[in-house]
Image 1: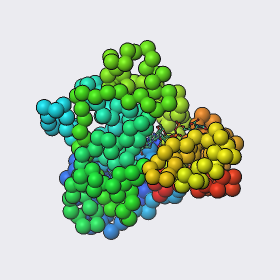
Image 2 (image 1 turned 180 degrees about the horizontal axis):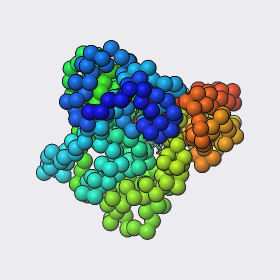
Image 3 (image 1 turned 90 degrees about the vertical axis):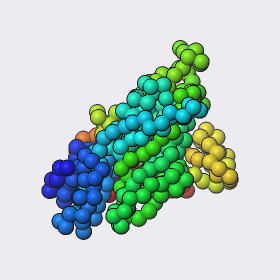
Image 4 (image 1 turned 45 degrees about the vertical axis):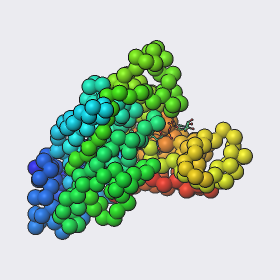
Length: 339
Ligand code: FAD
Ligand code: EPU
């Protein structure tokens, strides 16, 4: 375990916002978490659990304890006769590293989630999703510490209440849960998921029956590298807003005015719109506040183009929200946790 007072958070968030934490504790083993949280110097401070900081915006300094989860370990627990393989992963493992590891063993299930930044422990928080797959397709259970009671709990997938960019871990107040481990069920006998626009075309050179999970992970990584700014070069936190889910009648009206508006069914009477399209239609690519800008490459990504503060990024987000609301009457909701 490593403790630091007045810690610089810039290296620990992918927007590279120069915020500070009153205290930061990095825990390398699950059992250190209880020790940190019961330490009389720390236990009464507000607490933020952090992975790799790829889905947070520090609007300000953090007046409490930032608990960085860095425990490691991944094992195959069980290989069933039906080809179902249980994989247990520590929360501090890098997600993309896990995808490469499982795909290289011929295991199907999470290959379409390649190159999503962050830790495995953060993956259930918003039920990470991309290219026609989401964590909930493969998640069996989550082990978490209830910080308010100091007790451990195992959640099966249903109890996690996973939805589009949401879960109980995100909705319960006070950053209550600290996830230390996840359990996934993968398959030795799977099929490539090619339905998302552009995915099938990127695998054109391969015969469908020869495509393996590692090919899928490589193809998805290629698409993502072409589409999204690389956070190591251009600091960002991925999509800044969720895609809005609206009543079918609202989407119908919008389609009437703008036939090119992308719409996807999202359950009974509901339609998911594209936040990127709404922002792009408002002409906001390149829009700036201080060092923050709407990416020229993808309208849903806010970038730190140099020297941005958390307040710059937040003001830009409010400006984008207001412009989209004025033009379309649709309220965009931020995806990252705003601290
Ligand atoms: P952090 O940013 O550190 O934390 C995010 C939230 O999770 C915070 O609320 C934090 O308190 C909480 N948290 C983190 N770890 C734990 C834990 N162990 N226990 C309890 N709470 C915890 N997301 C997608 O879903 N799909 C995408 O395609 C996608 N693409 C992205 C592309 C880019 C370039 C970037 C920068 C981000 C993208 N994201 C995407 C968002 C991000 O990668 C995911 O949300 C990821 O799961 C965040 O992991 P993290 O470890 O960085 O979490
Ligand atoms: N579009 C524009 N302008 C742009 C970019 C995109 O009009 O600048 C339009 C495209 O034409 C397309 C639509 O927006 O019709 C959707 O674009 P894209 O396929 O890039 O997907 P997205 O809806 O913007 C979502 C997720 C991503 C995920 C991709 C792929 C959300 C909030 N975002 O983006 O997740 O990788 O789909 O599945 O759901 C993230 O959460 O951080 C993230 C990157």
